[in-house]
Length: 574
Image 1 (cartoon, rainbow, N blue to C red):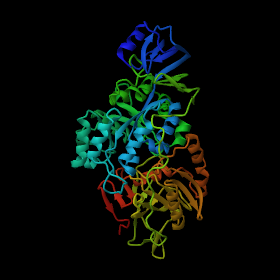
Image 2 (cartoon, one colour):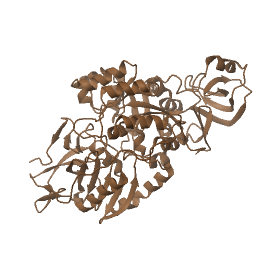
Image 3 (cartoon, one colour):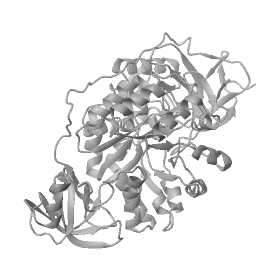
Image 4 (tube, rainbow, N blue to C red):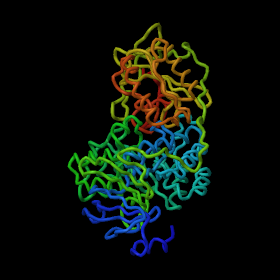
């Protein structure tokens, strides 16, 4: 679009391509609701006001028009859908822009994974900006399938200067504080290109927080308490309130928002599975919950739009105003926020809450399989844990949180071997290095609720090695072999029979099947989980048991990890 072409349309001298009439605009700048018309030229908003002509006129019948919603931080891979299928899932919820950190696929296949994410989203009706991963791998305490060094990042940014918007979440906060030269080099590269540096700093406070922010890290999505959020806001950070599948922080953090500080809060989903998105919604879910909590609808919409756009310097997004992109959401009221229409680049892509067509892009020959799942040689014998002390470290899991605690327990012993104790909800866990199939580690977790059988997943943040948890070794081995056969996915086994599975052949993370198909398969998961005694969806929880940058204790393919000390510790304590 050329400026000289849109100005005559704004002046009313040229007829707009589309005229939206009979609408109420929630003006996020003035804070007022205007009964007006909106003139669109190509992919932009030409003007707001007294326009009466259009090549096409759309009567919105008195409904409210809002800016398209923006997700400030997410991993598309966590939806278990390929990027285009993900777009089909979130567009009906009014999300028109996302800031995607593809460090999941990058940890599996490196720069090829980033290229896949760029190509698969080029030309689709969803703005997908890339936060180039800062931590591939996240630490040296796990084995990833690839490494992204400063040299890789420089080349990727130079090839995609428009699409790369930030450095992905700097999870290795000890590395920042300890002046890790490679990490600081990555930060310097991005900040000298005037890109944002995204944060990830759970429980970092005081002088350590000051030091962390001095590395130009100005956002955080890991806050869990009001006090933590308010301290970080007071030090100049943008807080992304997260409501995902495993990590749910909305109910607590929304208490920190008020009329004086709301501009420093945004919304993000981080990791949310397709079943939850389909049933609850996406960013619109948090907008509605904010109003239910008691926030002014204007404040809630700002947190979902302009606040994030301003933070990331997205100059033409986050508002409905002249010169902005014609990305809009049409709702029937400002309480329930029922979405009837979504407009992307001046085109109606969702009508009556339904996506109008399959999402397509510029690159139509996308691979249906990426990466490999390779198993090491292992057997029931090699899965045995020989007793080497009186007590063991147990990783305790909490529903709705990715934070895990260390608990010291007496192991259940059978013939000199430590085994699962389902009666105490203590289950054996194996993390299998799957990129080369070289080795695995063993431990125990409490909180999964498995009474019999085993579950397995190739989703294991962030290096995505296989995570297997079970009450017996035979079922654990069957689960691992099924994951290899599928090139990744999720599986449930009992009595040496596969009860349920979902194939995720794209990096062991994503499927290119329709969202409805994936959600239908996931909906069948509950019965299989019940069959092994589990009353809750534990796959997302199991996926985070490997993440060695979230307190307090984790397990990777290299062993049990003390996160605070960033070192491997023994399973047996004495």
